[in-house]
Length: 606
Image 1 (tube, rainbow, N blue to C red):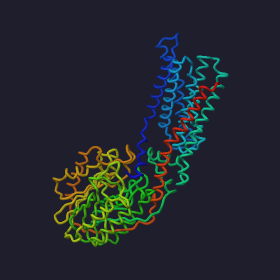
Image 2: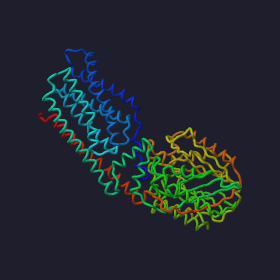
Image 3: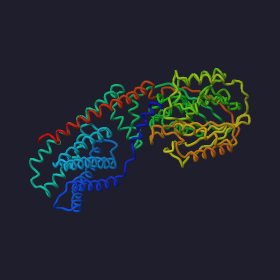
Image 4: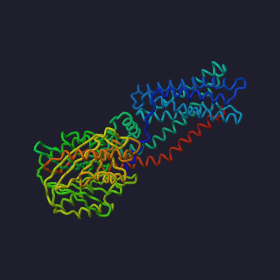
């Protein structure tokens, strides 16, 4: 698994939160139960069980429920006023119900211990719980809303202050009129000192993990996190602005095959050495669809040799790829000759080769074994090797990206797979018969499937190439790789159709990676339905067959702003090191702070 996609896997922790009304209903029910359980544990001999249940429930509803609902509304308004992001009302209400539940659990545990030790720990338990949810709220606001620490710390005070104020009011009015006085000073001092201890530990923790990001990449870790969440929740592309601060301009290439009739271009098969990442709709993640839609005719955008180093930092960078293709199309020479599709293999490397006019297409796969992206330098080597071997001007290298496991690794210089690819290219027969060529096309957005099924916006595109009475199906899914073994299952399932060869590819789109996993390969679910779509696409493409002329091209893409080899590696290594360090620092720092706060509240002697 590539490093960038491992990081993208962190997106699985971002879940769809419940609607506001469900959070409010939850707070009313949970707060009632907290109060009831507290009263039932702290048995009042003058009241029955039913009276304890009802009275306790009302107490909990007013002190915890109403206060938490109010805080949910106030938190959202406060963050909104200071121009914070991400905190919609449903998020704020969910945070309130979660914090209230944590507080309730601590109070109930304190009540149980009170009964065992025969001492009253309710007030101290509530204070400790309020300190805990204060720190938790401050951390959430600071880390996700793009606000300053002081603002987050002040906003985090709202819920615990409302709960303590409501408790003080109810206690004074209905339980103990002497409660206000020294008790208030005691509560205030304990709460302030404990809160400062805990929130300073949080501040120190964030500063520790933020330092490597600022030093190595010049970006703020909380800005990165909050804008990432904004993209997950709202589809905001503001994160691209952050990427610009660490971008690197590169030169790369795009190769293509153009098929035309007397009416103009019928089909375009493009293989850009640009990676469709990093994830969601950021950068070039949806490049296969966006680039294809820039042309008025049937266009397949396959996965060229490139890794996450070549992720465009903004959607606008895709325009540079389009411009290069259009420039190349102006000089393409067409003819009606092509070769049959032939497969070659050496060890684990498998390629399908077809020559078109003055160029050739090489479809590369290691299926049934699994590998990830082919690095650009390796792709250039394959191009040079194949052009020399077959005496052609253009070599369109396609990484079929059709056999996935979580352990799949990139093909980098020095890997054994590189030499296997070079060796298998050396087995290509350069003297192949040339024949007229026909092409038929079909595309389907697969409306019954979606990103949850690993299918991107372009669905499936199929091109049938008929040369010398041989029909080859080029089947391209808009997906990020394919479950291992599914490629062969598809090939077997269409063996009865009127084709002689087939290769199944994916675009490697990363728009599907915002859901459930860092990777989301096609073929995890709904395999029979997907196979039926393949069969239909092949049958429909055959009906569309007509004679064409074909030409190929290779164009340079200049000054494409990408993550770049240096910054991409730096980002991944920084995130990985921060995660590793956090696993040690976070428990030590936060547990130590909580322990000190606990001792201060329960044994402070006030």
